[in-house]
Structures are given as structure tokens and as C-alpha cells.
Length: 414
Image (cartoon, rainbow, N blue to C red; front, top):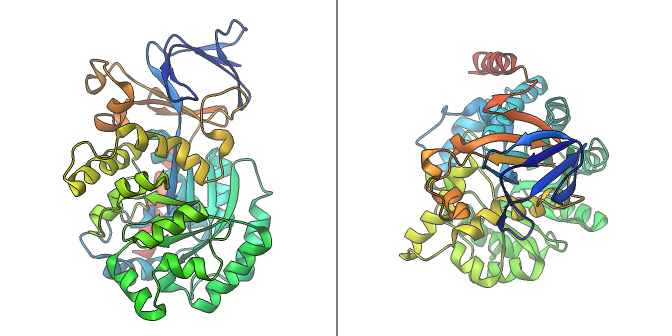
């Protein structure tokens, strides 16, 4: 057992309190005064909080970090990314994913919602590393099949406690209507939510309206893709009609402000979403379009870009976005047992160093995390009760091999 003591915790009600937390195996078994015999983790006045969950990413795209920058989305994707992706092999995905996992740890991220190919390699990389991964399919007209999607769904939801799988596809503009209807049938069969890139760019929405007379959201809803909920990754160019569907169907708006800003895709109408009670989650998007896998940067951008967009410094309260990056993202990903610090919950936890200049003096810790916090402040990341990163050092991980293997991929396909 491990007892976290002598510091603050961000509790299940999202309040900062001084309590002990006792972890046994992979579970939090007590919150309060803990007198049981246990290994002591002295917080030294720092903050223990639920980890961040990255609700949208493409982890293995570390291969293209800083490879195709300063380009608009369509040119970046079609002329640079797709040709490089065609050269990737399964073993590449294993090492490239683990490279992303290293970066996630440094940012206090314990789980990612990964849309990519070679799921068998992603799953193996997750289990071997000790990282939590929720996978979804990037099926489109060119890669994967609906039969494979269903096969993956059944296989990887009974694979390992660190791995799960959700139904999804790449996007409307890469997927035929016939194929989307087939995916909707699979979702109906399992009464499952569907996750998809949606309304990322203005041209995407305009193209969909030209093809079908509907926005992507309206189209998805009309063919039953959202009957059991799901999420729209990006959700930048959403209409009032779209948001009514989000509300009705319980669709998550997964915000990716860093990627959307870098690709000049736009700013999601977060204030309007909040006003309508739309469920919010936060993701970094992939390391080839962001390019960092840094949740602190995402939560900062989510807040300040909305203030700029609304011309209102009071817009988009920091605590709402902090909740979105922890509790919201966890629920979006189906990780309901990893969402908060509470008895019986899974121990996916991080320690934030408050004894750093950017966190002093202590006035409002939650707002400080959003507006001045950084990866510098992550002292420890625990996943499933196991500490993988502590005192800013990786524990039991062969970092040099991951770096070498990842670089070898670039030298082969570049």
C-alpha cells in the first residue's frame, strides 16, 4: 500500500482539501485520515489530483513531429502525412506509441483516446509500458473495413485492463455514405457510441453541405451514428442545429485548441457549448499537428482563445476547462472509474509541485494550474496504482531504446 500524505488533494467534489489518500494495488481504498501501515509518499505540501486524460490523439504520429509544419490542413494531410503513413509497419507503431507515452507521463496524462492503425501493436505497447489506452478506429475509404472494426471492438474490449476499444471512423470527407451507414449498423448492434473527426474546418462543413445538404453532425445523426452518443473531435465549425443534436444525443465536444490554432482551423464556440450544457473533453490531437502532447498548453489555450474569440475576459472559466481535462475526458473515454479521487476508484493520479515560482504564492490552485501551470510542475504520474514517473524521472522504462527505435523509423521512411 502507498499512503499519500502531508499535502493537498483535489477531491471528488473538485475542492482543494488536506487529506490522506491510501492506495492498495490499483485502487484508492481510503480518503481521509489514514493510519494503516503503508509506504509513505510525502507530498511535502504539494497537490495530489486525478490525472489528465487525453481525449483525442494519434499517438504513433510522433513519426511526423515537425516534419510537415506551417501548412494548411488539406495540404498537410494529403501531400505529407498520408504518403508517410503508407510506409509504416506494425513494429513502428509499437515504438512510436511508447515515445508518445513518455511525453504523456511528463504532462500528467495517464490515458489517451487513440485513433490510429495497427491496434494490435498499440495494445501491446500500452500493456508492456503500463499506459492506459482507449483505442478507436480510423476507418475510411482507403484503410480498414467495417468487418475489421467489429473484430477490433470485440477483441480489444476483452484484452487487458489497460486497453479498451470504441467504435469510430476518420471523418465524413474521407468516408462514403454507404460505409458510414454500415458503421451505424455496428453501433446499433452493440448500442455503442461513435467517435469521429467532425466540423474541424470550415471547408469540411461546406463540402458536406454541398454533398448531402446537411452539416456533418446532421448527417451523422440522420443515419443513426449518434443514436447512443459519441463525440465530435474538434467541433470547431458547429452550428446551433449541431449543438442541439449534441445536447439531445449526449455528444461530447472534444476540444483540441492547440492543433486547431496551429492549422488555423478556428476556435470552437466553447462559451456557447457551456451555455447549452454540452459535455466537454480535452485532447491534444496528434504530435504531427500540435506538435506537443502537453495538456497544460491545451487547457490554457482552451481558456484564453475563447476569451479572445468572445472579446470577453470573463468567458470560459478555468475550473470548467480543468474539469473537462480530467473528469470530462475520463467520462468521454468510458473511464468512469478513473475520473476522481474517491474510495473504490482506480489510482490514476498525479502530483503537482507547488514549490515552484510559477505556482507561488498560493491563492487559487485550480486557476493557477490552468493559467500558469506547466509540465515543469508534474512531479509524479501513477497509472493503475503503479508509479511510472517520479521526481521528474521515468521508472522502470528503457527510455534510450524507445528513442533509438523511434529514430530508426524516421531514417527508414523519411
